[in-house]
Image (cartoon, one colour):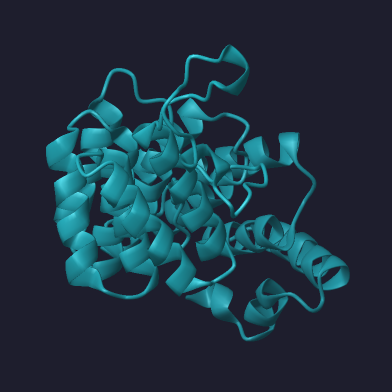
Length: 261
């Protein structure tokens, strides 16, 4: 499944010494004055370290930092959300679900939490609950990652074998992110499946205007040409597919006559 997770990984290197946690109480000497310990900043540092360790697949170190973050901020929805993501990565679904629910209970205005919880639920096959979580995210007035959430909702709808919903959500994702031109290929594929041939043609022309042809775009042209009985077009695009992308999965699909399905 092609899902987008929102983890907000810092792009900057964070020292493992976690220097922000070592400050002590201040003295009367301004030159030796240090800032008081900031549990929120310390927890954020630990979260970022945990995400870096997760990226490197160092699970023990990731959990150690998340344990510290939770110690510093036991009522932080963000800490619980990232901890839930950790439990997903180590396949502890019950704990992941528990931590997502705790994160939501602490902050019902976090679109990122609803987004990731929906992705988690969909991966488990809980499609209705996943859709509800995605829609909860996009309904929040200050949520900005709307396109990613609609795209995940579309992917989930496909998993649930609900093509009409998937088309609806892909269209919304594209509306909120017009530069995500690849979504036109998802729409073309589904519109062909649903026999919405005029819509599929528009999707493919839209993709073609903004991007060079790919194996996938040519494959969808092949499928559309066959479905609409356009023999000349079928011959044109199949030759282009085999000539430009002979080793692609799409070329193999054509040679195996999968466009007949």
